[in-house]
Image (tube, rainbow, N blue to C red; front, side):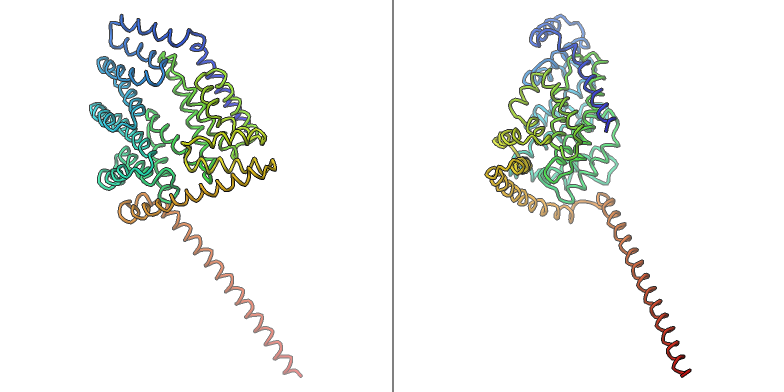
Amino acid sequence: MKRINIIFTLILLMTGTLLSSADIKPGKQALIEKYTKQLKTSTSARDSVRILYYIFDLSDRKNQMKYAWDIYETAGRAENINAQLDMLRNLGTFYAKDDSIIAHLLRLTDNIPNEEARASTRTYILNQHINRKSRQPNDTELQSLLLDSITKSHNLEGKDIYDRLSLLYQIIQYLGVDADGVLFKECLDTYGELIEDLPASDYPLKNQFYTTAALIHSRMNGNPEKAIRYDRHLLEIIEQLQQMYVKKNRIFRNYDTNRFISYRRMLGNYQALTSEEIETIHDSIQALYERNADVRKTMDKEGQAFAFYYVATKNYEKAIPAITGLLKNPDLSAYQKQKYNAMLMEAAKASNDNATYIAAMENYIAFSRQIDSLRKITMKREIMLRDSIIPAPLLYKASNTDQRITNRTHQKTEQTLMIIASVLAILLIVYVVLYLRLRLSKSKR
């Protein structure tokens, strides 16, 4: 555990050093104006891409959407394919809800000459689109499109790893992100195995999966150890990217918000953390809060990090109002409401706050029933996919595991029968010996 804490401290020191140069410079708007003037006098597409990246990294999300198109176009003139791919992925995230723009981005992606880079970027954009669209409840059109794509457009047994990833992601989303059935878990685990086979350059797909998996495993009755492991992977990649961008002179690229999200999610899985780890993560969040206005605004507005820390450290007096505030958010999923009410029950019970405890328990039961109804829908979809679509390779590992369990069961049964047979044989021998001795003693009389 000490080694983990040392690593976290080093990460914190590194990120502070890397970003301090950006923090002491003039305000962002002044810098944007400075580089905008430079852009007008730039004489080469290559220099223009570099300056546009400065402006992009300094801008808010709304303006980043505009500059992303500018970078893509300028990178094309500079024959900078990596920058084009980067912006296609960014635009895929910005416009994930927009069907027409996503279709346009996919057409642009098809023009990329590198086959693997093209397939990887296409998979990323499609995954972002499907993930965003899947958040809309009861979207029957999307469900129909997903089912059509799953059944007709992919080959899980093929050699194209990106096609297999697309199929698995679509199955996960079709079953529903609120699902937790056997097939759902198999697809998630298989996706994770394939992701590890990808080259380091496919970090966008790795990040995308680690984020999805961390969210799924962070749910109530999930796997907090796995969730924390995935967030540690994300933090490792963030540090690598930060160092890479410093070398490329992208001095304004800032990952504070990404770090904060991972640290916050880790705190929400406090059951799998030691007291020392909880304090180390909390210190990292506090450092981000102090130095980054966006993180500070998010924490003050949403309050999740505060609530998680209060529960994790058993500061229940502060935890109760903090969690109560979280539950007022109308955009929470059923899983979030279930988990937060469980936290509230823990805090209220420890504080002898019976009224809050009863209310939280009633809400917890209500959301648990809601999730159970979602599971029934998922089970129907799983049965349909299992019976008619999903080929044997996906189930290979599970079936092998089942077979090993069956074999072990048979072995144990055989061993038990042999022991019973041996005992019976011994008893029979003892009986025969005693019987013969009795007969012998009677004959001597």
